[in-house]
Image (cartoon, rainbow, N blue to C red):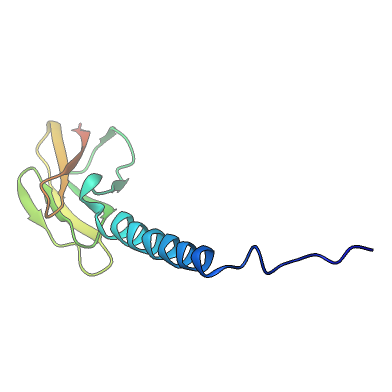
Length: 120
């Protein structure tokens, strides 16, 4: 049996390269995690999940966005709290009502969702 020589693989130069490589990987991972400005905020409208027709003029909308994003409904701010969830009771007019939800992060990226509610 031939003994393996491990001393030639673990040199001071290889150790320094491994430490520098690990440091670069940590810094790159930090930037990828922290710089969320590369993507727009998430926006999920749960109620109404799609376009609907109803008979009542009062309706409650619900949804969720990123906690740090500013949410609006037809240009009016929605309070989304620390969790990013929002709820708003609306008074609708008879006919077609267009609801335009928008989430905007601090970097100016936006996500929009549009729902139509027909009040009969």
